[in-house]
Length: 127
Image 1 (cartoon, rainbow, N blue to C red):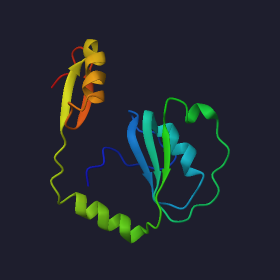
Image 2 (cartoon, one colour):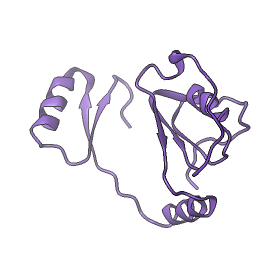
Image 3 (spheres, rainbow, N blue to C red):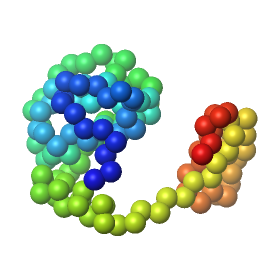
């Protein structure tokens, strides 16, 4: 289905994830998912009900991690969605900038010259 990692809720992936989705209605999974995502990552609570989320340290949210909920989503909705995205060609558009051109990327974004997303590349990371 395109997932880069799936595992037991008490396991951490080898590398931080961009995003994690929780379908189980178990609030204690939220801090675990926040531990699994990178700075700037997103945790999505994908059910219409969830037990209370326990207290967790701010450090798990720090670094611009995001916690989102989804209204009116059932398990069947999630299964249908995952089945659909595996059949649809998703065409993403990126504009690559070397790290030293970050200010130019911001100017292009501000002035509407980007189609898609700006990606800053570190030296030696280009495909």
